[in-house]
Length: 258
Ligand code: PXP
Image (cartoon, rainbow, N blue to C red; front, side, top):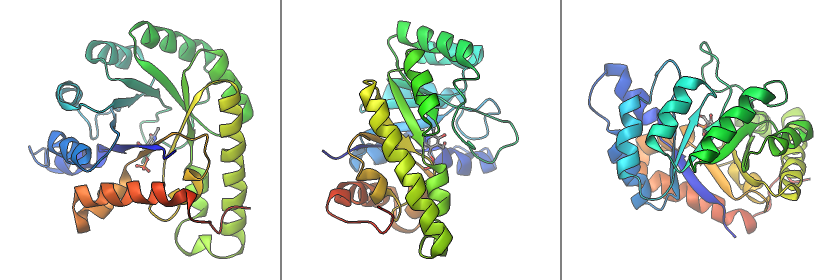
């Protein structure tokens, strides 16, 4: 079975916010992604509002007909916005004001009381609740214990090892294979707990195949690389190409699979 693709359109909003202009519209972007076969739309409402704005969440909730996944920190402010707008799913993430992008998984073990309370409130609101964590057995166990329905495994370390020429030679290839093994083992453990398994962060047309070959992973959240490709081929074509890269995973063998 091919994993679902949620397209993260944060960086459409990044371009818009660069000029505080009405364009490009994230709603138009979401519609184009759905038209091209995306299974869902993902947006991250950050505390600093650097890209997605509160009004985007309202408008997206009215217009997205596939699946709306809202990434957010487990704060009271964000919980209220999520419960008011009712995205289909919320993914709880770690957030630091000075980071360029989400830097790694949420430490659910260290923040267990806060995350447990947030998960309970979201589930009461009938919102599917996922936690974005590193593929670490202790974090996966904690996510299960606190009542999350899904884990999104952070692929950042794997993606970093596959960047550019690093992936082809020595240390990069070895690290990519090792990170892929962690993702595979993490996905297997999460499934044993009955959790749904998503993955994302830093995935590209070139490195997604090896992760998509892990059959326990049923959802991808991918943004930056699709929006970057869209500059050259348009958003619809960029989404179709990513869907194809995921679909082809079962057929291809990857140099990173060991
Ligand atoms: N998943 C989560 C939880 C994220 O925070 C992000 C980045 O916002 C992504 C997936 C998408 O990452 P990328 O833009 O690198 O594809």
